[in-house]
Image (cartoon, rainbow, N blue to C red; front, side, top):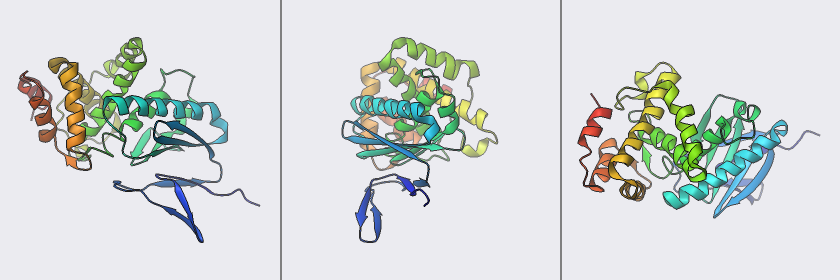
Length: 268
């Protein structure tokens, strides 16, 4: 007898006559993945039930991904606002990197197999990044093709905010590991169509985007910066925001003139 098929989905299954029903209210998409090999583990992070779907050989990394995701949910809920749903699924994937969806994210198996038990790892870093997309994509959306920096920059910067909350030394490590070796440069006006390879895209959109947000934070001060993040999330919850709208929220939150900084990072 073959093992049962296990479905990892963006929302919990409801048993109905003759099958199952999935329902996700107010979602941007619905995503699922199925395997006969998944080992399923769950953990509660406040009101959110986090479920891990991973392969048998990666038990310890799967537990770590579950822990980092839960910690990130606690931190982002406090710092930004409530998550969009009461469930989140983590699915081990056989492709590089991670991929966000509403209520679910994929995490590359290379992060599981390469995990050394430390928060200074891609498994921890990318788990936090993909979790942040539940705020910067699932809640406050943006045009991921024409203005990709807006959600990816926010999620990348959310990584270092999370590390700061754990230990300031980890934040210093993050900048030295994640950003500084790549010396990101260029205008954040770039679209996904301006790149033919991933690394130049990542360096410009993700890493340069994080640098811009850090520069904004230093120009505004923590209170104004985090207040503006919360305002942006609330104001554009369930919508598609633009760069102009994002920057307007931040300029209205401070007496500092942000225009020179914006001009530097958004050169035509």
